[in-house]
Length: 121
Image (cartoon, rainbow, N blue to C red; front, side):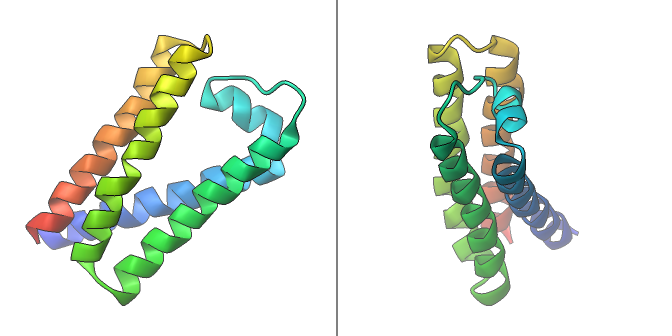
C-alpha cells in the first residue's frame, strides 16, 4: 500500500511538472499570471521556466522508471528547493501571499512528503 502511494504521488507530481512546463511554453502569459507574478514583456524567461519545469518532470519520471524509488526520493528532496524559491520570488515581487503559500509553499511540502514516502519504501 505504501509503495503504491509513494509511486503514485511521485508520478502525479512529475506529470504536473510536465503540464506546468507545457503551459509556460504554450500559453506563457496566462501561466505567469497563475504563477503569481504577471509577466511584463520578455517571453524568453517564460520559455526558460517552461523548459525547466518540463525537464524536471521528465527527469523525475526517468529516475523512477530506470533507477528506482531511492534515486527519485533524492531527486524530490532537491527539487523541493524550486517551489520554495518560487514562494520567495512571488512574495518579493508583489504577488499575493495566498498564491505564494497556497500554491508554491504547499507544492514544496507535497514534494517533501513524496520524498519521505519514497525513502520509506
